[in-house]
Length: 399
Image (cartoon, rainbow, N blue to C red; front, side):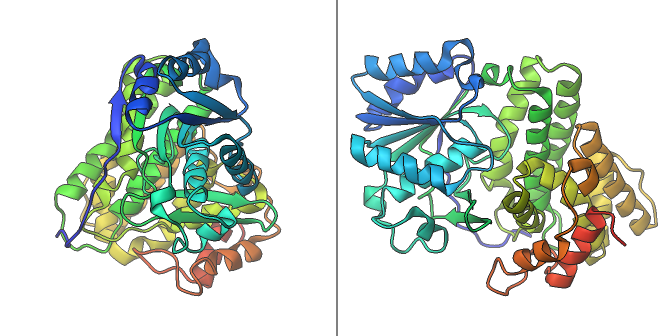
């Protein structure tokens, strides 16, 4: 059953070969005059001269640009502060993020910070002091599909000083990107392990919407099952043929569909695996997708009895597990199949294989349990400290 909802996603998507060459013209039409180009330090951003071309296109459309190129994976608020200072000195009125989730999240935080006179980290606790009328517009050239931040309504940011990782979610479309340019060819130079890490991340976004406390199955469930099967299929295609354009294109758009909330309307969602994973990233700087592949199978085994029939359906519809009168057996087979697929995608599924220390499990559980001011994590099943600790111990293979 669909509950009542109010949903709007206004991001303009421009998809296909050479789509990024339209950025200069479209940003100018969207009101840009001085553009911050924000990206990471890797060579990937200028593969085949892409970055140089974008700069030329901005200039050809009568605009100026300044550049910030120090965004790292698991982005830190320190870099956002530096980029905001650069924007204020340079009179920036438009932000262009070139990269994946870390860069896009940083660009979103820069936009929000420019609409606030205080420290941008304050906005990760409350958005009330932000003036939407001062927020610059934001475009993205996506080069690493994974997080879906290019279509999502929030942003995640770490704080290395406090060892925290927090989200910022503005009301309505405040945090959504205005324009997103998606050229699958720009993802061809990504290492295959990074590509597949992104595949697992986008898959998890659908899982956390699919496992919701709804008692019937409708259009959102059918769409979600189809999307999960597609991601799983094209993940295998890329594993065997990383230069396959069709698979690159399907995965690129799947990441956006997975996180723009089309597959989450009319129901609650469970972000428990993400919330626990964020604490691991904050403490150990672990790549986000790896924290998901480590935590999610243990989360599934901890919560499946909350709705064993939904887990059994997931096993049958997504992984093709044969129907059985023993729903629990089918459910557990689906969880095992999920874990195997993560491994097939070259992802670790426990602390040891991921190289994550196990000496601070209790602290990780405590920090995760405090994220919502004492309210439990999760939505499918509430997760309190003891639940989180059990999930982490299972992922760490600690009895």
